[in-house]
Image (tube, rainbow, N blue to C red; front, side, top):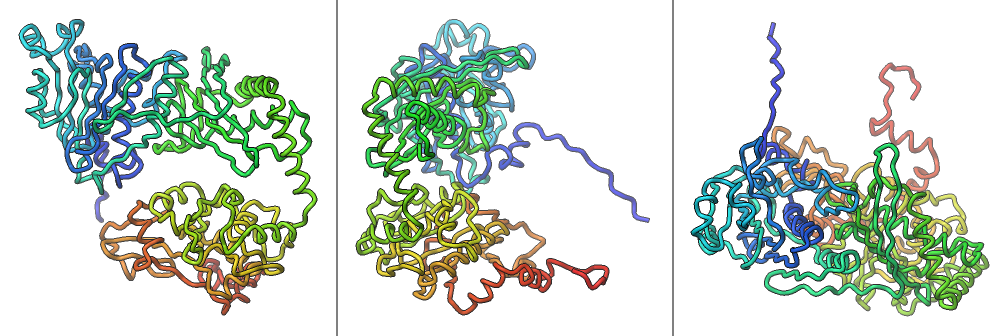
Length: 638
């Protein structure tokens, strides 16, 4: 009898724990954006937390070419004193181990951008070379390593340094600023307290080209100005970055505090909200930031809309629900403790544990105050909202369709009428334009990065579409997703349409190649087949097939057997959705006419499609034939 193998438990230390499973820490290995952001976040924290820090220098160009990414600031400097317990410097502890830093014990008003990140230690672990230089000062030299103590009196402009390769410490010491720049072939400005330089490891990253959202830097300036009354210089690749942030007409700053009995502390958040209303109600805009990070979704956004709607309704005794058309706002939130839905920080899900009932009353009060001081301005807005509500309640679904078709001339719609869920194409030659219907912001975000904005439009579905096969037009037009599809295409429905007014030459269904995506595609296809059949008759409807698996130069598409095309003994990639593919893959799968796989929808099998969408017995027969439903005990009942 074969003896069973014993279970071998292995504990991975830094940096192996990060390098072996980088996706656990940074979410993906396509580009080193996250590890760049971690280094920059530390300098931003110093800008907001240090009185002395007023200059940040960021060098990206050399890094994108394979050289050093360099981030510097003139703040207090990472501590270089010895840690009594570990017998290494505090600096080495911070950059050479996980879960070490100064941000874990904070007061209620202390703000840290990097608190929810993976830390600069992951930048170290995932870089082929990593260097930290810290300026030695009068109050630190005598508590640092021996070489600092020996060189301090005799060496001008002395810097402590520590150098790593692939997360492993290679060298530590002290030398003059100029000597260190020559030793490591690094470029950095003089007068800085901390310099962090790294080269992403090409063995880990698919590309070493890292990007940073410069809008974050604009938010940093606003935060420093509005919350700290502080000016700072931020330089990227030798050029000073000016803030292009232009607030809306009205603004207020509000600090919200609520006591937590469970934690025996004050929960605190500060909000800077600037807003206006569009006189034509045609433009609604929302954007936001949490601790200077660009975060356009989450609690801070939701609370602002809820507070504005509640204040407007009660201030002017509004009886309808059309309160947000024309509302344009930006909200910046500062808090000591926040949490996000993922390492990409796209949605804020926690603001110091505050609940809506604790925040909304304070924000609502501020909106009330602004309404009272600008009563005539907002009365005009309320009157326009009432007209909008009245018009919606009066017109039938068919009249809505006729209005949609009537606002188009030669396919060029007035852009203010396009739904907010659509990022339109700019070309006036509408027959060349393509509309991609995709699911969710993650998918649309990936496609927006790589599309040609002149000819590619993206419609982002923000909810589950209706199975519209047996529904009347009134019910369909009440559904936001279906209404958006009819509105942006602009050609009408079967009962009333003008094919020449269609704004796109191709309508491409681009949901994920999984069960949920196939369901969404089937709902949209069923709707088009039943209510916009002219799009199929004119050869304008397509389904974009994205691969499910990838191995080398081989792709496996839906309907293909992966076992027949892949070497199952070797690693392969499973695509879970559009939001997880990189921009190069998105370009190949959806936009490159020579590489993408588009299936044209024809009218040949529409009858069977209708049957599947309307009759459960037909769906059951299909699942039995495909082996999804089986009768393992031969009962004759399935």
